[in-house]
Amino acid sequence: MHKPVLFLLLLFSLTGFGQSFTAVTEEMFLGVTETDINGAITVLSGVLKKSDKLDIYAETGLKFTASIVKITGKGSQEVSQVKPGEFAFFELKFSQSPSSGSDYLRKGYRVYPMGFKPAAVAAPAAETKTTLTSRLDGKPWKANVTYKGAALWRKGVKNFVEKPYLQLQFASVQSPDNRLLTIQVFYPKEAPAAYTASGMEVNFSGATDGKKENTTIFGFVNGRSAPDFRLNITKWQASGDSKAVISGTLDGYLPEVKLLGRSTQRVQFENGVFENVTVELFSEQPDMKELMKKAGQKN
Image 1 (cartoon, rainbow, N blue to C red):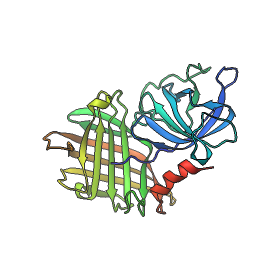
Image 2: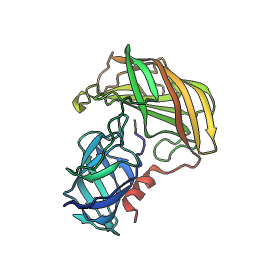
Image 3: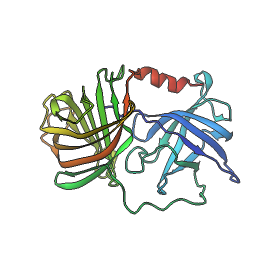
Image 4: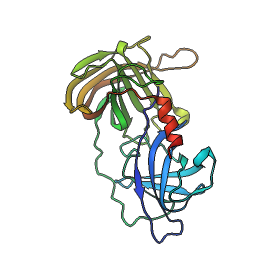
């Protein structure tokens, strides 16, 4: 199961600090693992070096820490630093996944050299707002839509999913639980409708303790050996031709996916409810290979 492409824009500025720089990241993509992020960064002032380490703050005060692994400049040549006016593509390694939980990495987070103490960082929110609540194996489970995690591609995406599909992706907000629930509905109706497993692909992966070595994968592909899993969209409110706000329910069980052998393990969702999720609507068919290519060649 693919994760959707991760786009974000961050702007930051520092003064009076030994390792000062100002930069803005542009198109960003998930790498091989959840802690690898790749993308273009435009330096506005100062110098951004391969040796730099970054602290990135959410509005709630949550901090992500990342290291610059590689910088590729014009002509696909590796460089050691970047100044204003110079294009560069960065490979970043985060100490924890920046794309899950309620404070997943997204537009507007403040970024500083590691160790810099911002003048003010908002205190963590007393209560996390969630868009999905459910019972998972009999226990409460809460999640939020990931950044760019709700979209309908009316003509699909070339070299990815080449048919109309709706994708909804929810990330746990119950730290350290880092599990992601990704649902793809094929040939969806832009109206309230009920869907069964035969018209979907579902992936539920991650670990309750957040540890990579304990990751498990549950789900099904193309309805093969499809379990009793249901998605019911109860509200579809279009906002022009580019967005819709939806609500709905989900329930059923997902079998464990194993590369070798068969497993009798499964997880069960009950009374899942999601409300007022904004879905982006795309009428054109982009080419996934071209999107990735442009990210590395943008000048």
